[in-house]
Image 1 (cartoon, one colour):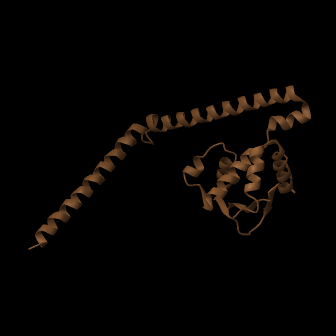
Image 2 (image 1 turned 120 degrees about the horizontal axis):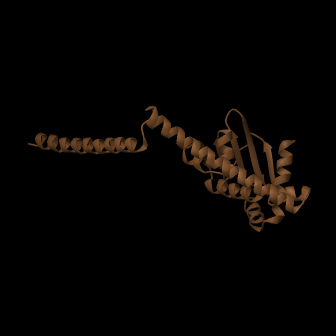
Image 3 (image 1 turned 90 degrees about the horizontal axis):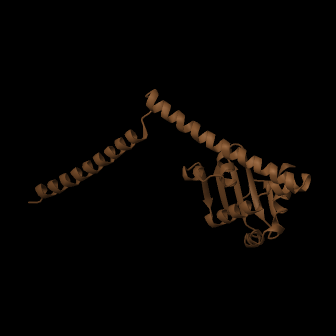
Amino acid sequence: MLLAVLENFLNRGLPRSVRARQLCTELDGRRLAIEAPALARFVVESTGVAVRIRRSEETADAAIIGGPLSLLIVGTGWSREPAARGEVEVRGDAEVAAKFQELMHLLGPDVEEELALVVGDVPAHRIGRLARGAADWTRRAASTLWQDLGEYASHERGDLVSRPEGETFLHGVDALREDVDRLAARLEQIERRVATP
């Protein structure tokens, strides 16, 4: 039931975007699996004129695998950090996966436009502006909170190492590793000279 609603919601956006229709045609017959291990596996398929979503174990051209929250963050385009940290893995045809991601982004609903159908343009715009402002404030507040907690834990409590101290330590470790590698190479040269009569 929920998948059918989501499918209808996405397909309603197809007529509004030339690029989305083009991608849908290019992906005709292709499948993308979206998998949250031990929770669910969905297959998104293009029929050339529409997008179909279903729970399935069938094979797909590409698969995106990760935790539910990481998949949501990457799928909505809010951030690419989970993919960069390796929390989301792409298997199979990466080009197909990228095209499906672009298609989903293009078909994503414009909440303000959908709301305008119910309450009208002006109230929908004001509600949208309020929601965007609240989301921006929440993001800034969360960022500031994490930064303040990090500073408190490193400077006040001493539980964490400050960033400059950590970077200095890591640079020192890298320099030591390079010195040890050079020493090992030098010792190998000496051993070869001694072994050669």
